[in-house]
Image (cartoon, rainbow, N blue to C red; front, top):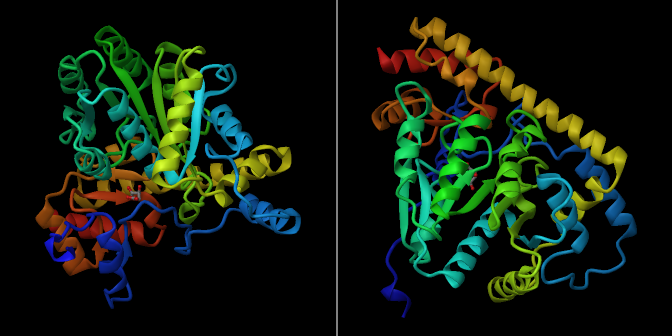
Length: 392
Ligand code: LMR
């Protein structure tokens, strides 16, 4: 049987991990997978997470099963963090293994509810989005998103393409910190997009994987909150991997907003999907997140550390934009300072990306997406000089 299997294409982001690891050069620079690193190259366990783990070790008395949808306290704390108050009667939710688990469950829910619904995704988007949609055999479409000339959003192209959305189609939107481009809609543009989607009868599906990495914890939720306030049905897939730094613990949530009278049925379907796919969701990361969000002192410390992380990335953005100005003698990369989140797409060719890797030992995704957090004050000028060299 197994001889019938075909080789699968490697994930373009994850394959960089092995390539980088196997590169013997000392001065190599990893700007690949989206993992936060401090100035020493370490992905730290956040202080509040460490404190919660200690407390958990001391107080946890059982590892018996938790609830199929996840601990209610986790789901409530996450709904509060993402949406604020006022959604208890509309929000069905399940804890999931990371943001990817939430995306997968959301897509399966869409497919169960409406097999003909198209899933609209930005071009470009996180490569795993179209990969899972294709794996599930769902119809899909793309909308333009990025203007590589300006490094900003191709807003006219986006609006023209989303004009083709049909009633009941799901439109996947990055709630903040667009991956891979780093270019984001402002709130006025969000309002226009939402007007259009409401007129078309679309179902917004928000991927929120970087809350707190862009303009701030509250600010990064603003667009998602606009969507939630406006639409009767909304899907939100959120991840704690980045903002709590609990990557390997697989901590995410799928929230499905519906009407109060449909909530029990929607919740039942979410529970059913959890049971089919993995039964109970992972608990350790979710429990740590809950302990942090339910404790004022831990929350304050977590927010302070998250803010340091965010400001460090903003500072690296400005340093890189300044260095690229100097090195290329042009303003063509000024957009790096305007982008938000971990990523910026630089607009280099695949060949230039390959030269950066092979000649300079600088690793980025093939579409020229860099992870800003992979840089530090020492490597910013090295990257800028290498880019200037490949462009020359
Ligand atoms: C990324 O885009 O690099 C991260 O979301 C990690 C991943 O799983 O791809």
